[in-house]
Length: 173
Image (cartoon, rainbow, N blue to C red; front, side, top):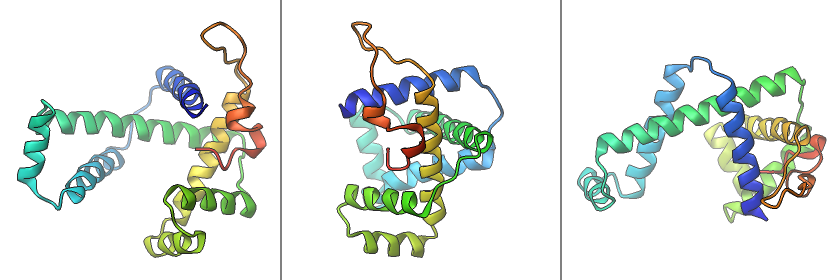
């Protein structure tokens, strides 16, 4: 079911991205690309030589890796900005309860106690990012609720099973 929910989400987001073209803030895209590279480097102890060996083992180059990272960053930023615009247009709000649910859900995904997760979010100044994600998820749920989704056999899929009703989507990922 999670695979089906992800496929629905990806298809809808792909269609949105294909329909709306706008310039992206280069600084945000650059920061995302840098973040992806830093994440990979951090995972291998900032060993540049190890990164080169890993890329070579995957049959790719540093330039190809960075091009792919830029494409992923551009898509991610475009999706975030689109969902933010939709949330603005629909005047989407996230209640304290929805934010708490989002935090608990995320803490569980990371295998952490909710309070420990909150403490780390506060230290990193990321509570606002969790709020923004919850708001984007509600905007996406609103979009999903407005379209008819069919499976491979043409049967209509009840998307509330995956995304909940439009007004209760803050805990979805």
